[in-house]
Image (cartoon, rainbow, N blue to C red):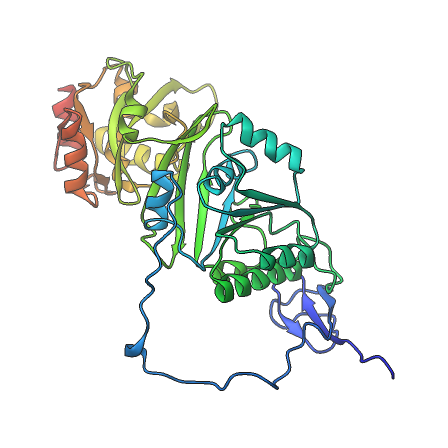
Length: 431
């Protein structure tokens, strides 16, 4: 008998759009020469025969999920996930190379009854040695080193695992696709296949994703739509602080963040991040102030440092580490316009101590106070904590979650200054 032909479709390597025939230009993203051949084998085709009858039901008759969430044993991770790992969920985790993704997931794997660790980047000895070095119990972890998607899927379905780790989604490839690992089509296929396993078997699956220079997870946005939760692990490789945040979470609050510290024994939860950031602070330093920033729903006291130097260039420099440089330029312009301080003659360097990155506009007041302190060569009262948003006309607006910030500041014996505008702030601090 003649062999049945394989069905051919063509997938755009940039956006993932599918076409029945090849064409030079993708109609979806307007890119040229991005369509690649995708063979669908008989095993991949699904016959309509034997399919269960489609049932449409009333939403009010839903069955409540009574399964308990799986605790990871790491408090900060459980809080970000909304109480733990939900059975049958598909999670995507991204982060810079070397930030500690594999370390964190190995720790989580050691806490469940039975886990499968699929790695296309490391050998069994490498992962095993890391586990022993961290002092983890790894007898419950099964390991598979492969870049073959079909082998990874078979291993995932053969045993009753509570948790499956796939490291990473960009390094697995399917033989059914003509493209190489990491392409749009391959990444999409990996995500869809593991989604089927998670939803049909109730196994929790965590996919590790590489990130781009812009800090986004590499691959099609389809991947982030497929998963239930998207996590990012952030931090500087040379520092010890790590922040875990969720940008999508169907089972919890996306505003929760977890603060951890990298130690010789792995990642450990930080119960009070504010104390960690202020531990070694020089209280009487010029250009140093304490501000209260919001990381998700968590208020954190941080040290903001500013240094103003007379510029030797025709155009003054503005550099910010851990903060938005555009925000620094905006605040400097407001100070110069309202207070008459010639900041255009100064290079301004801004630093967030501890390596943390803050996007909260509620830190405007602390930044302004630090810049003025450095420029005037006068230290600010070390017992004052600053927060508030600065407007272009110099008014100081109440920051979001004001009550939470106040409670955090008072808990560490800080006073709060609430001036109505920048001019009032300047007079109260420097006379």
